[in-house]
Image (cartoon, rainbow over all chains, first blue to last red; front, side, top):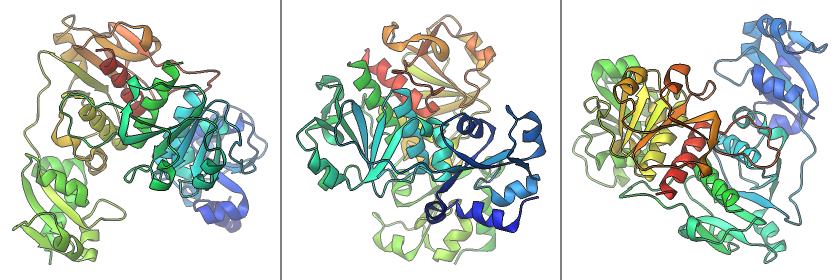
Amino acid sequence: MISKNQIKLVTSLHKAKGRKRAGLFIVEGPKAVDEFINSNFEIEAVYGTREWIEFAPQILDFAEMISVKELQSISAQKHPNQVLAVVKMPETSTPPSEINDLCLVLDTIQDPGNMGTIIRIADWFGIKHIICSTETADIYNPKVVQSTMGSISRVQVSYTDLVDWLGEINGAIPVYGTLLSGENIYETKLVSKGLIVIGNESKGISDDVAFFISQGIKIPSYGDSETESLNAAVATGVVVAVFRQAQ
Amino acid sequence: MISKNQIKLVTSLHKAKGRKRAGLFIVEGPKAVDEFINSNFEIEAVYGTREWIEFAPQILDFAEMISVKELQSISAQKHPNQVLAVVKMPETSTPPSEINDLCLVLDTIQDPGNMGTIIRIADWFGIKHIICSTETADIYNPKVVQSTMGSISRVQVSYTDLVDWLGEINGAIPVYGTLLSGENIYETKLVSKGLIVIGNESKGISDDVAFFISQGIKIPSYGDSETESLNAAVATGVVVAVFRQAQ
């Protein structure tokens, strides 16, 4: 049996404001919850239906059994899936002041699904840092958490004023960015230490940020393609794959 | 003013059953509607708010002005965006019996966002045909239509029993497929005429379909990545980019 206060707390975590106030976020579904239980994240509470509790991969003293209806009352999903965990937000990470590897810079990725997918791409290709504009989707948004498939526990994501930050590290390393006017990425010299800037889903990279780009790049289209662009997460995947292949 | 019958018809198109019965589907938002108006698709009706009608890129005799509230009553979106068009489904396309180029085969892509993104990838990389299992997300699902960003009008998508179809064309051309046991795609001989099979988001390629794969491929991960996989649409983007680059 879940109390009214618990319901109130968990549902407040559906929104950025509530998450910030409580310093907590939610993770849903057996697979994702299991990844978080096995990560360095601190688990605050686990609410599982009988189905989950009986088949849970590990015995959790603090897991609380709730009904399907109760799960529905706290879930951020249309079709809740057996279990919801409340997890402590780690301390906010600050953007690196020195770049020793390939890092992603997100200039206002807004779609939570794209954001989660990009974190998963970073994890796959061994990118340890993602630096985001302050308007980029919140990594603890339930939809982002869901689409990272656990990668969120292995990639450092920080939010900052990109123009200030890029100003500070200006000139020290190459800054690549996907631009319509960019050079064919397959004909561009790609290095293993630098920044790759990805722009907003509809507006691309803002002028203020584009100012810092030392090398514009573009994924060539094929044949008589009339489409304007690839999805932002797909473009990130292709670009990062080409960078890693070039090394 | 929109009639009760019009509301009933349009909302019936939110579901596959309604779309099949009426032979119609919906497209929403100024940009997508504009792409469809300028395509070969036949437009059955356009419902726009005053905001859209006044700034519409072209004069449409058949556009009907409705209120924001009326748009909400027919929209499939949480936040409707100025205009909704009702479009005629073209005749069902049959899968090609001969493969003269690179084609994508989708073994049950279920997420509408992934499906739309994959159609957009095909369009970008000049892939003309996508052959889908019958359980793959419906291209006329409003969420798919939305995420294709108009590419749906330029790529042929057909649905079929993949095992039967692959059996018919068996041996005639190479069949690549993304498999956990696949060869590093950068070390694989890639041809310009063949099939690329993409598996389901969580289950991958089914055994029945995997039987027809002549060459398993895999996008190599980097460093000590612990993530299990890339998102299906991102993997499709990377694989297709590598194929096109190899040609």
